[in-house]
Length: 239
Picture 1 (cartoon, rainbow, N blue to C red):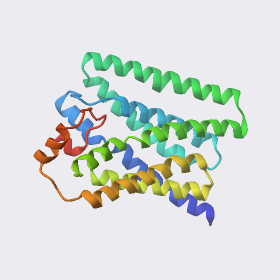
Picture 2: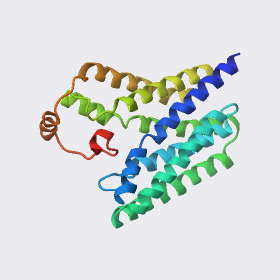
Picture 3: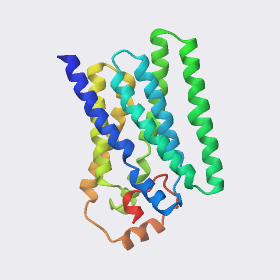
Picture 4: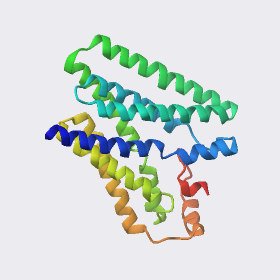
């Protein structure tokens, strides 16, 4: 019975994580239509691919964790497609920089880390090291919404934080946290518990600042703040 419940939450986690992986599809559809990457950055997709690699490895070497591996295999494929499109339409300097980062961070580093872990460590130590690497890169990925949350707080508007993405983020963290508690997997639990907490904060911000403001009002507020280009633009910013 317990194993069936774990599988159930693992399958739910696969669905919600799959939605997160494909959430930037609108960005790449825009790139394909305009045949240009414009001001978009490649770093988020490079880091998500790196993260997916380590979760696949962890899911393969840890007993009864195949559901962790399968969804991240899907995620790795999605990120490879995204990066291929990005490299196809990026301007020359961005293309060179992205290609270098892909080779270093998505080929050389994970290959070296996984081979080193596989051939120098054994048993639970190997699993723990792989899990630690997964946890570190997942925590980095889960920190990405903080900039959007800061914008919401400064502008008192949720215009630049898509509700659906925040809701999926919330459910994804919650589902995997329950899975981790049932499976007694600390490495899955800590980053996803953090993601669940951040998802809760995003929904609280929605409850506080859901009343719409005009784009001019939001623009005036942002104009008074130090300007930084977001790594991934929200759907509202694409209009």
